[in-house]
Every structure is written in C-alpha cells, then in structure tokens.
Image 1 (tube, rainbow over the protein chains, first blue to last red):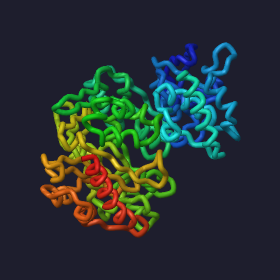
Image 2 (image 1 turned 90 degrees about the horizontal axis):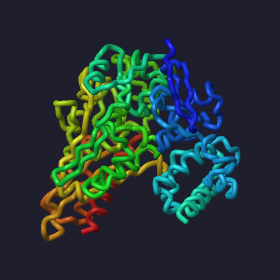
Image 3 (image 1 turned 180 degrees about the vertical axis):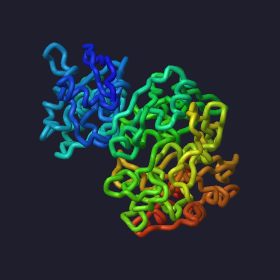
Image 4 (image 1 turned 45 degrees about the horizontal axis):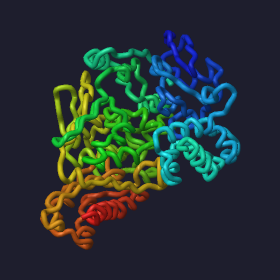
Length: 157
Length: 327
C-alpha cells in the first residue's frame, strides 16, 4: 500500500514520517524513530507494556495507528525525565525495587504517572484496580503498588 | 496485519458515505478492530477514522436522562458526575470493563460494536470453521472448550458469548441507540445469532452510531453493576448483572425492578421474568433468590460452561439484595 506522510509530536519533538497506514504507533516509535523504551509485549492490548500518553491520557500504542495519533501530543518513557532528573515515579520505582526483569516497567511507569494524575491512586485497592491493565510476569506487584503509593503521596504533598 | 488505506473523516456525513463502500469500515478507538485485523479476522480495504470528528463526544445528563455522544470515551463517561449519580450501574459497568488504557481509547459507539471473545472466532488460521466469520463453515466451539461460551440465546450455528458490560446496563434501563435519525432500543440493536451469527447488530451499511440515550428513572438512580470473574480486575465477566430498583413509599415493596445479565448470553440479556416475579412484592431474601432462578430460564449448557447457570442467579440475587440493604 502507498505510504502516507504522517507528522508525529513526540516528547516535544516533531517528526515527519512516511508510513504505511497499517503501522501502529508502537511500531513507528520502535522501528522508525528508535524510541525503544516503549515495549512490545502481547501486541494485542492485553499486557500494557506499550503504554504511552496521547494528549496526556494513557493509551496502548499497539492498538493505536500512527495515523490516528497525528495532531496529538505523544509522551513516551523517554520524555518523562526533565534535564537529567528522573520523574518522581521513575525515582519511586527505583527506590521501591518495583521490577525484576524490567520489561513491563516502561509501561508500568507511564501508567502510574497517569493513574496518579487521574486521582486513581488514593488507596492500595484503588491502585491495584487502576493499574490492572499492566501485567508483570515477574510478579513484582507488591513493590509496584508501593512505588505508586509513594509517588502519589509525594505528588499530594 | 494486511494493509489498508486510511481516510480521516472530516464530517459525520462524509464518514457514513465512505464507510458504506464495500471493504470500508469505520475506525474509532480501534481496541477491537485493530486487534481483530492483527488476528486476521478483520481485513478492511479502507479504514475511515472518525476520532478526529468534533462534537460527537458530548455527555449531557439532566432529569429526563442522559445523552452520550458516540465518540465519548468509556473513561470519561465512567467518571462523569451526572452518570455516577443518576446511572450508577452505567458508571460501574464502564470502570469494571477492560483497563484504564483501553477505556481511554474505546468510545461508546465502538463499545456497542465490540465483537465476541470466542477463541475460535479469533483464530482463523487454526480454526477455519466459524459461522460468525464465514457463514456456513460450521462452529468450532460446539464440542470444543466452552467454559466462556453462552448458555442463553445460542443457536445450532453459534454459541459465542457477548463479552461487554456497558450494553448490559443499557439494556436494563431501556436505552436507545441513535443511528443518525433512526433510533432503536439497545435491546433490539443486538441480534441473537440464529442462523446468521455473522450479523450481530441491526445496523445497515451507511449508518453510523451517533449517540446513546438513556431515559432517567428512579430504578436507574438506585442501580448497580455486579461483575463476577476469574480474576478480580481486567477480565471479562463469568457472570454479571445490571440491576436497578425502585421501592414504594413504604421502602420495602418493589415498585420497579430492572435486571439484565452479562457474561452468560449471546447478547446483553434482559431478565424480565425476574422483574415480573418480584414487582409488587416485599423485598425478602428467600423470594429474591427464588425469583433470580428465573434469570436462566431456558439456559442450555455445553459442559464446561454449566457453572454459569448456577452462578448467574446468585449474581442477580446478590445485586438485588445489595440494593435493598441501602433502603
């Protein structure tokens, strides 16, 4: 199929790409732009590893066409840190040892940043419910909940 | 995923016209369609992206009811103050569905077009026989692993379960779907499989869902969505119930009752027999449990899904009794 021009605004940078319409935002990020922090897990919207923010809301890059994301503001894990300083959620994940293999971590952190911003991190129960879309096959869930709780408390204070 | 051409609609009329052409499909949140395209179940020639259309995502709630634009996101409707206060079952059905990420993507119109999760339907390379995909090819689920298949509303051609939550609440409260000027009850929008399981919705080529309207009622205001599943979150229902209740002035006698089931049928399943058995009666646990058995009248199991016939009435009874406690 003919490639089409697609402009993407990612982490404050504008990118001009020529893509087949079927290319997902996930594949555009990883394969065309070298932004490999966003992970491909199931590629079917079941695991959350590819979570990014579009217009400030967490979505799954594997089920979003790159073409659909044109004109939106996209943030990936690479865009969280400011001037070499980790985002508070990134710092909390390190402090709480909230990962083992690390493959799901980018998605967990992107999801957690949005979860806190949405106001859905008020209790451990609420954190578990609203982080349920991010699977961790290492089973680091207790530490992930602790990291989100810590970052939510920091954000509130 | 087979490639397709991409068209970004600039107006609802243009979208309808473009999507009416053979091989064209409307694309909203994409959470079903892009997934099924990857599975090889959907193979559109053209996708008509309607997510950039303006003005179709409004949520309006007043004493007469709620009107929800087709492009409103599940997450926004779930968190809407008016929906939470006047239609708690709708909000609960939404936030208990899918994940936060999927709810930010999926639209209300797209949600109604969600396809079954039948694993045979979703796997054409291993299971070529599927009457829903290829009419007349047979059904791989019948005689297969049926734990997640329907016990109500099935046919010899198809036993695939309707997997959604929102529409269960919509059916309970007599919501209508707007296809432009044409309006029909959500209950009539969803079709039983019968001999044509490939046709799931009463929508014609050239039509597009524009809004969902839910009439306000006392039963909708006092309502809940109880969802029981294999894991606590991010899972489809093993059995679920949308229930709403209105009491007479005595606070004990049931004036109005709405019951609909999810996770057990081929479409969102209104259980009028339960409603009729309890209306005019005093809310009493034994009577509620007995009446709730009527929810699965006519149910047929396929072995591994027998548990749903036991589970569904208990879910209905628990939901009704929970609403009664808050008298």
